Length: 113
Image 1 (cartoon, rainbow, N blue to C red):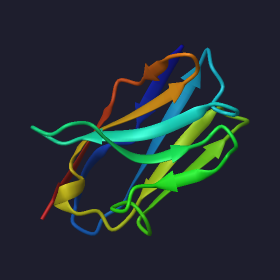
Image 2: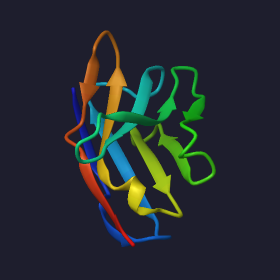
Image 3: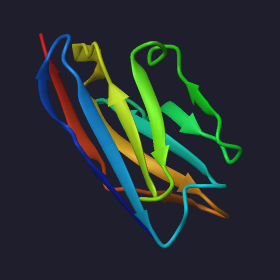
C-alpha cells in the first residue's frame, strides 16, 4: 500500500490550495480515509474524513473552508482548502484504514500573513 500526497505549497492569507492523495494497493472506496495535519511543535490532528459509507466529516476549523472529494475512477482523494490562514500551516497527511493505518508521506502547506 502506498499513499502519495501532493499539492502543498506556500500561499498568502486568503489563498487556496488543492491537495491530492493517490493510493496504490488499496481502494479508498469502502474504506475509512482521513486528512490530517501537523503544525510545528504540535500533535497531528484530524482535518477531514471520508467514511467507508462515503460520508464526509470535518473538524470545526475546516467547516466551510475545506472540501474533501473523492474520485473513485482515479482512486484519488482531494482536499480543497480555501480562505487559508497562518494557523493552517503544517504538514498535511493522508491516511487510510483497512486492518491497520496506512500513511502517506505528507505535503507541506505554508500560509503567510
